[in-house]
Amino acid sequence: MTHAEIKNEFLKCRAKPAYFIHTYCHIYDAEKRTWIPFHLWRAQFDTLKTLHASKLVVILKARQVGLTWLVLGFALWLMLFEPAATILLFSKRDDEATDLLDFRLKGMYRRLPEWLQCRAVLTNNNHQWELSNGSRALSFPTTGGRSYTATMVIVDEADFIPDLGEVLNAVQPTIDAGGKLVLLSTPNKATPQSLFKQIYREAKAGLVSWVAVFLAWWVAPWRTLEWYATKVAEILRTTGSKDDAHKEYPASDTEALAPATLDKRIASEWLEQCKDESIKPIASDALPEGAPSIPGLVIYRLPDALSEYVMGADPAEGNPTSDESAVTVLDHDSGEEVAVLAGKLEPSTFASHIDAIGMWYNRAAVMVERNNHGHAVLLWLSDNSNLRILTGYDDKDGWHSTVLGKTMLYDACADAFRNKETILHNFATFTQLSLIEGSTLRAPEGEMDDRADAYALALVARVRAGSRASADWV
Image (cartoon, rainbow, N blue to C red; front, side, top):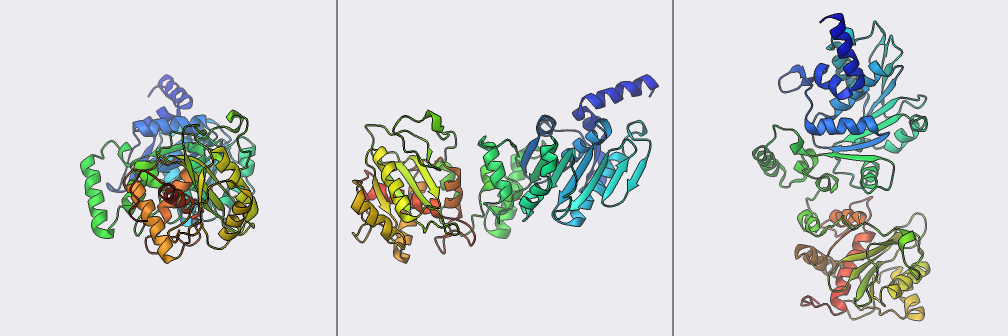
């Protein structure tokens, strides 16, 4: 190339990171066991634009869609064209972090034409790499990196890092100084309520300043439906469920975020067919006068004067270490979720909130779990409320969650989802319902199921209040 041609190419690379990566970067192909040109797919190109334009990006992805390479390619572009850039690379273990730096990032750099490289490499070891233009990259396990302010922080396989919160605290100076932070990961099915998933969900809902990106199995152009069917068949043959397919090759972020389904009481397909995330919570400043002013109350539909409503309530003790108390409000006829409240509320406060919400929703009938603190809630409602308190299968006020009661409760809940008799909007409730184990009818150890129980109680309330649906089981 002539000097003029080199100058023209350099300017193109500096102006457009996609051109730089697509034209001059290489990645290692593990199947072919060789380095190949990094020709960007459409989804990679779109993700790169998001990386360039955004400060905080959380990426949920299928396996082998080139996203770690893409983020490292963008980091290399920053080091070359926006010096002096500092790149921090985190992964769960030290060997994984050093692989990001020593094999991948340096490997991409070494394969650039000489005119794109810096004059010299000043520091070159497994944890630090410094170029003569002042840019540097450092790799850490998740316990390091606290004293640095960076241009860009990359946390790879973030959903598998148990101390992700500590990592985010360590790199807070980078965020405060205007640097970029990128979390990327395949889903960890063992931790459905992880911080990574929480950040992704909130970003997708527009509740935080993060930008959510999801890349499904099919973004790789060479992957066909036949290829996917073969993969799923292999996984089913080996494991007996689609959990690993949803982990490694999710088709949607719902599949990726859902917990493992083996031994779950409610099939993920049943939940999915009843979920509608298009209905967003009504902003508090858009609520009419007279709406309950309760912290944590999420309202999806305002009361309709011609409609009837039912409620399910799962009380808890209300101290900082207890479970949450939760209440779900459903439209009696359609089964649509119209409101939800969850929080650490002591029984009398929780009961007063039930009364306020129920009165607003046209004196909604309420089914309260009778166990433990439910007795106090039922007593408060009996003494202070005009709501109709529904009786359970034993014809006593509230629902007694014995082994029999819990089985009947979730049999009815599962039937409602299988038969598409309800419409669910709240993603936290969706997640908890998907966690309920078939053997225990509870969430796994360490996870919460209060919202799930409240939703199931509301579904039972539809029947006990006189639903037009079949009530043979009661």
